[in-house]
Length: 311
Image 1 (tube, rainbow, N blue to C red):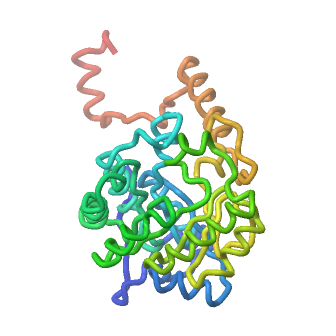
Image 2: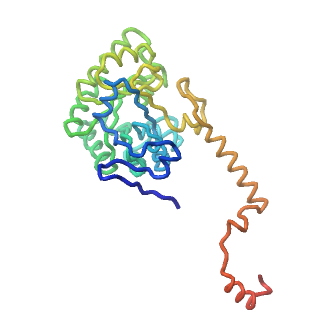
Image 3: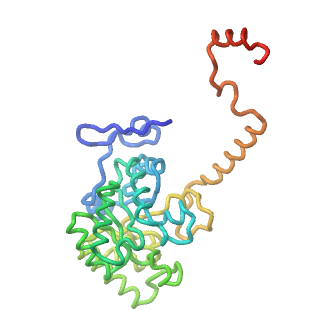
């Protein structure tokens, strides 16, 4: 069992109780909003973001004070073991977003729209985005693609749904790209991605993820735009950075991409903990007497009289 409730002040600020003391978190933390992120770019204050997929991880991310939490379709690979992001469904994404929503009070919560949820018909795209907001509590959605997504972005923003764009290496286009490859390496490709970014901004996106592009291109696009760029494998000149939580905490089973920095080795700690647990169970040192429940002395005495030879 664990405590899952949050306290809030009359002003709507989040009070994390003991967690804020243990982790050095401010007494009260303002809710992150889309206008607040836009202000961050003007102030040249970097935006911190991660992907996470469950209540416990989301709560840790939120308590750490990060700005943006994305429930990415990368969960198809990280949580479900698929080779790419394509198989995950709307219903599965909604389930994960609901869990994350319960753990988040401060960060802006963005839901990734999975492959097929907006590719056939824009009306379906709007309807699916509305489900993320109404049924799962997302505060924004993310869609992949450039100029071809501008009409959809306009329809989503007209429906009062904030939209995060995503260009460069777009995982839902893995078959077209022929694998996960750095994009924008030629002059023509660079100009196309710059045009995509400007078009998405004009269509109403509040930020754009730049994935797997050269640093120099990301720097140019960041200067082109008045909205924040969030980089992943795009160098340090973006307005913010995002990593997959499981990558940065060494909880994946494949070699890390070049841009991933390991901040902890949770898989190593978990493996050792499981080995130690197995050893203690087999040695009958877990659970100990102190870790066991006991009958009252009176009940023990009654049992001793009645079943003494069996105890």
